[in-house]
Structure formats: C-alpha cells, structure tokens
Image (tube, rainbow, N blue to C red; front, side, top):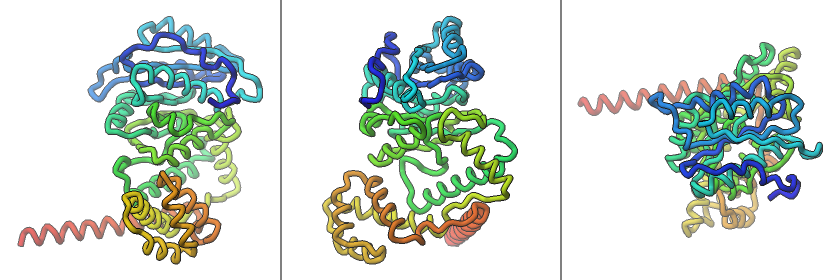
Length: 396
C-alpha cells in the first residue's frame, strides 16, 4: 500500500459482501450535492440488453464523500434509506490538506472495492470507477460484463460531455475526430485481437473497469493529485493488459469549467476556449508520422514475439537498428530483457523521439483530419475494387 495513504483507510465499507457480487463501482465525491442524486439514479436503474433490470446482487456502489462543505454525504445516506434493496454503501472522511485530492480518494475507494469483490469473485472480480458528476448509460453494467466475459482485463468507456461550452466546441470536436481517426489507423496498421475496430480512444476515471488481478499486477492506482487515471492507464499498458475501448460502454459527464483538480477536462475546455479567442489550432502528429510509428511498432512486436518463442532474430534486429540509427547490441538486449512488449515499445519510442525529431512531425489538426479522411477514402475505394474484381472472377 502507498505509505502516503491515511492510516485506517481500509476501515471503511465493512458491510457484508453479497456472495453473487461481480462488480464494485466506486464514486469519489466532494461537494457534489447538485449531481450525486442523478449519478446514483443512473447506477440504480441499470438494465440488460432486453431492458430487464440488472440484478442488484451482481453489483454494488461505494461512495466516499471527502472534505465536503455541502450535504453530499447526507444526500447519499438518505438515498440508502429510500432504496434499501440497492447495494449502496457510503462513507465520509476528512483528509489532511496535503493528501485531500482525487488520487487519494480514488485509490482508497479502489482498494476497498478490490478487498470486497475479490473476497467472493476472486481475481476475476471487477472494480469499476466513475465520477459523481456523471451519469452512466442505462446498459453500462451490462456492456461492461459482456466485454469482460470475452476475456479482457480492462474496459474503457466512452466519455461524452454534456453541453460543451460554445468557445470550446470546435476544438473538442476536432480533438475527438482526430483521436478516432488515429485509433482507426492503429486498427488498420497494428491491429489488436482483443480490441478490434470499431473502438474508441478513452480509458479514464469516469468509466474505467479493471479485474482485481490486473489492478494488483499494475501496482494499483497511484495516489497523486491529478491525472491519476492516466498514470494508471500507462501502468496497465506497461504490463500488456488486454484493454478494450468498448463503444457500447458510455457515460455522460459534466462540462463545467471550474474543475476540482490541477489538470483535467475542465482545464482542457478552458484552454480550447482561449485558443478560439486567439484563433489558434491544436498541433498534432501527422498521418505520415503515425503511420511510420505504427508500422515500426508492428514490426518490433513480431520480432519480440519471435524472440520470446526462442527463434533467432539477430539479423533482423541488426537490420532494424541500422535503419533507426540504433546500436544493434543495445536493441537486442532491450528486446530480450523485456517481459512485456508495451514496456519495450515505451523505451523505443522515447529513444526514437530523442534521436529522430522527424518521427513526431506536427501539423494543424484540421490539416491532419483532412489527410486522414483522404487516406481512408482511398483505402475504401481500393477495397471496393478488390471486392468487385473478386465477384467478377467468381461469376466467370
């Protein structure tokens, strides 16, 4: 456990665990009196693919109200009394100023959820994080379970903001479009069997599901003041966690400009608004740069898998090192010492950026989106021609 966590933190949520529990949903809440009832309603009213209510015994909700100056805790306690069949458990804590941040609270909650769900569901038990200013889709639980049952370790949900501020909207739409196109390119050039297209690009705190096993193996969520979910996502990647960016797992979150952390979506919205006033565009990696990186990543992945299987890769590694202006022995050593591929790729990517600035050529986001769309349009035409040729050959 992180030594910065408050002593006795594990004493919260001592209520009995239902033997059928599969999912423990955690909700950090600080001064969320305006939102928390809608958040809880959305969780309580979960249905399956046929519109039937999801069995309450399959999931529980843990709310930790910390350092509140409003009635968030009281509202949650009243909600418990109004809906006694709904497995909602609420705790209140006053944290010292130096650790009173989202990283501490989310970590405390996820550790509590881990302890509870693993006791009955084992390593395959599921911890799911959301936020108190968000409303999950009516089939959120259903689709998380459906994806987890396919054997993945992590399910990232699509996070959809409500009423994006007018000044930020164009930049937000461009950012989302670019990220979707980037993900589509990745699916084309370096596909992943456990995360097929269609998929999205998000894996963050408002909708993040992990198995107990992968939570422990990734070192648990870091108790840092902000971007704790992003650092946890990186830790999951480094151990080759099977991450599914599931389009059907959706959540709707607030677009407030007054954020609760040093950096987050609210700060990004402000920055985009300022960019509109200055008539600026976001700079992003070009199609050419990303295509090179993804092609290289796939090639390196094949070499790493071959090395793991005991095959000889020395000549291929030396040829690759020569192309990249790397030291062949160093690259070979990195390959054989890496237990996980994504950890190896992270090292290679940093080295590439340091030695080859062309790998991250930037351009205005509108130009990048245009290039992506042209690329996929050409690809679609080529695919259609191949299909048409095949049909003619069959007819003849």
